[in-house]
Amino acid sequence: MFNKYPFEKAPIYFNLTFLSEEFFSKLKQYLSENKATVFYNIDLIGNLTRSGNWFHNLKEDHRILEKIVSENPSEAIISIDTTGYQNAGATIVQQLAYALAHANEYLNHFSSEKLKTPITFKVALGSNYFFEIAKIRALRKLWAALASEYNSSESCHIIAMPSKRNKTLYDYNVNMLRTTTECMSAVLGGANTICNLPYDALFHKSNEFGERISRNQLLVLKEESYFDTVSNAADGTYYIESLTDELAEKALTLFKNIEKGSGFLQQLKEGKIQHKIKESAEKEQQLFNEEKIKLLGTNYHTNPEDRMKADLDLYPFVKTKPRKTIIAPIVEKRLAEKTEQERLKQENHG
Image 1: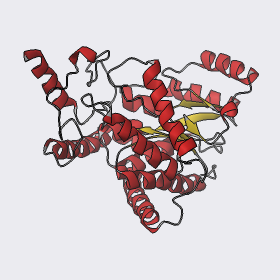
Image 2: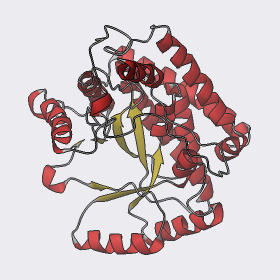
Image 3: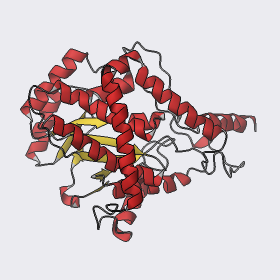
């Protein structure tokens, strides 16, 4: 984890996959006793987009969140998790607009009183180096503009992590190169915290070696490449500044269209957001299938002798589990999945 805090004061991040007043209260008490800086990352809407359901139901989820926020006004409670949009194939403009619309639902809900709790954004970064730098910068600008309309804090905490969408099974060591450049984009874009993705996270269970390598990648950037020396390295660079403004303007236009069209939650219920992401994902997938998007070792310079079947601890493809949902969930899918499944079948016949 790469962050701007000294190691002994590094914050603690939680990603709760359930919502419980009792658990939060006990957790808060324990962490307060240890004087820890904590980001709880509670995201009701993020859970809805991933699973298709609320934790309990809309009313109960918001009741619990209101209670937690009111009792902990200075804590970093609410998170806007945008990683699912990127990993499902949304464009950068869509990611920014949906992040803003996602956040706006919380601002609207708490409009009767100023939302004082710090807001956290979680973003996933792809391999389009300069665009990803600009994406983080544009997100800060957009949030500041939106928050000012609600007299809320214009600052936010951004947690960045590498995308899963371009990661691969075959020639998996290339994943280290991908995550390194993505972490570089995160630092130069001004993310507060960067959480790296182990190169083997797709197909291996959590293991000491993979996690150590992912930490070492960040340590090399910090200690040997001096990426922590300057906090605003991209400021004043014409290309990135103009790219930031362009992305922000396009995302703001899309955000306004979402708000005019009944808002983010309603468009999720109607399936419009899911449809737009699916359209973008299919276009990107077509470019990959045509080898216009190249992933080294997967659809470009492949090694036909590479074998992976015996090395799979985890199932690395989209899992479909039929269940009743109130909206169609936004499903994350990697570009290489179909290609990899075909290669695994060929291994069986070989």
